[in-house]
Structure formats: structure tokens, C-alpha cells
Image 1: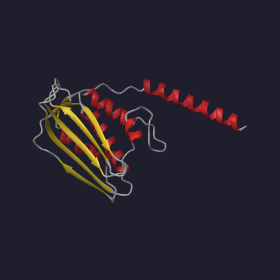
Image 2: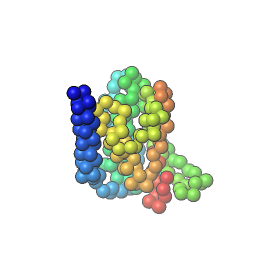
Image 3: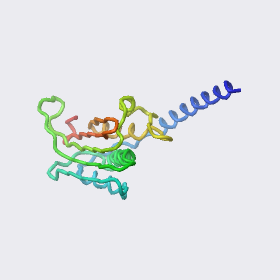
Image 4: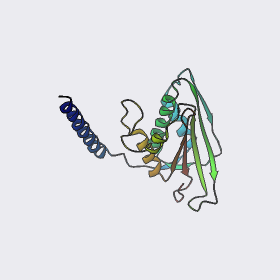
Length: 190
């Protein structure tokens, strides 16, 4: 009976995985509609959209108000930033600090770009294991109980579709840092 039940569970999990894959293919992301946008406003709107911070979480915003506007889809970018903010706050259940920073980045040594606007989300939460880091953008991978594992996959797609890049640094017990670079021109890639 135990073997039969185990086999049934394994078959059902496989069936649900296939169903979720088919649903993901059916539910396509809307097309990116980039317009010249103030990135600081998009970050502020994403934070405002999240709502009230938990009492034990501190938010610090360090914006460079001299950064140029960038060609992005503000709605999609807000969605991506909101997801990162939500994950950061969830990783700080016992309290902590979320620092959101914008700045101009210049790197003449990299032939692919010379100037980008960088948005950094740094939290003091629980951090991630190397296994989680290796699967961070893998569809259906989640460290959260009941998580669908699509949030960060969608974040990466939104940033990639706009010619940007996303890097993540994390250490268990010491928090996580998401570094997003957005080109200041359509011709530049970060």
C-alpha cells in the first residue's frame, strides 16, 4: 500500500509539473513598451506600491538625483522591483534593513557598455545557500513553502528584455544584494 501511495504521489507531482509548464507557456508576459523614464520614480513607486514596512524593518533610500532617464517599460520594471522588495522583506522576518540605492556606473574597460544606471537592493535578511543561488532564476524553483518559483524568473526576463543585467550576491545569515544595471541608451547593453 505504501509503494502504491508513493507511486501515485510521484505521478501526480509529475503531472502537476507538466500542467504548470503548459500554463507558464500559455500565460506569456506582455510585450515591453519602453519610454524615456526617471528610474528613481519607478523605484519610489515600487516601494510605495509595497505599502507599509513591517515595524521591525527599516528602509533606507539612497538615490542619485543626477542620473539620466532610461528607456524602460515603467510598469514592467515596477513589477520586477516590487518582487525584489517583497522577497527582501520576507527574508527579514526577524527585522533588518533594506537599502535601495541608485547611481550612475561607468566602465570603460567593458567593450559592451560604458555608462549604465545601477539600482541596488541590499537587505540584511537570512541570505541564501549556494544551492539556492545556483537555481535563483530557474523556473519553479522556490525556497518558500508554497512558492511557485516564478517571481525571480519573471524579474530576470523583464530586466533582460530591456537590455539590462541582474547580478545577485548573497551569503547565508548575512543578507542579499540584487544589482540591476539598465543602459542609458538603447544601443548599450549592461
